[in-house]
Image (cartoon, helix red, strand yellow):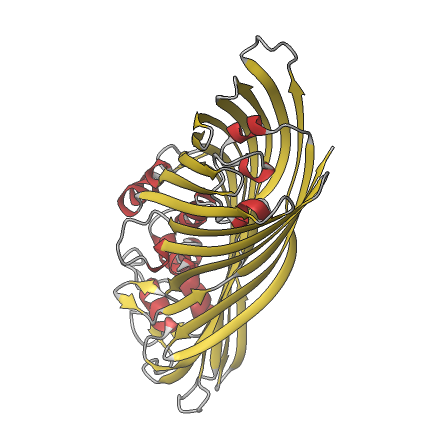
Length: 492
């Protein structure tokens, strides 16, 4: 999915920004829960109770605290994927251990019973909102659809009317893939005014593609929340956010059967880095309808992100007649401001005496509120922002969870999350994501230990090349990451 925009997006607007639409969509739709208790209930904790992991959903939950607490969460994640490409399947699994969240709550009760404001609580929290760790690997033998055809078509773009290799070099990065292909002798215009592949690309070649992505999204917050007459809880927070994503894509073609004259193999690689610092604020409220029913609403503002991209490519070839060649582009950098859309969260919690509860949250995000702004040219992102308006719509996340109290010490939890990413096109494969979760809580006098098991389920696809009336084979991947979370909460 990202690979297509690395190659095709550079021809339509600023090279890095087209790809960053996907980064921005991911950053706007959180896929992680900050604590094991919240995760065990599918993330449905916006109006449930005093829990550090719920403050990032609705800061009004801070008003429900009755004691000062400290919380720490870590997780172990197994990243699994099954990929289909060119009629073949490949599987991947890799595990990583990491830190998820940490928080501290300090409160103050007011002794004057005539006051409407019964208490005020304050919190410092640090959360890893998203983990962008994905890996796809697949390969197979296919006839035709060589990426070298794409390189030749790019070199023959109407803007290169003279069919000059210097034009390709001087218009980097927009034409740089084809310039690398020319310099590594994969395409040539020696015998024709047009650039053409130097070998028969309609042969049976082994094609493989690897797409590796890693990165995180972190949130730092200072929050305050109050209790008004044990009936209304209000809260707000100021947030700082940091995002970083790195993805590397490698595409390889090989004449493993030695049936193509003057060709052994080539390998094309792209490396892109996206990072940014942002700021936002949140407001929230919880209203106690009756002792067993609470409803809540939360609002997170647009996040202004100072973003930075870097991009580089390399291409190596091995030809029968002249041997190996390798060329690498310089690193291209760009900075801009990215506005992530604001989000509304509606919550409801039904308590069943002291036996348990059922809770639900609904996030609504208008992805068309996303916007790119240039640090220099005010019109640089007009086409990209129009693409956002055309290709994005409303993203929702429905979370449902329950908790059952076995006795005063042990709690069992279960949850479900249904999430759309906001793509307006109906055939966007990775628009819908699911998660199932189970949790266990052990409560002592001053400590609480929570465990959660989360199974995420979604699909994605990516096309190694597209554009210039060319459409190569599409790789499809089933992504099945599993996470185990552990939270230790201590009263202070």
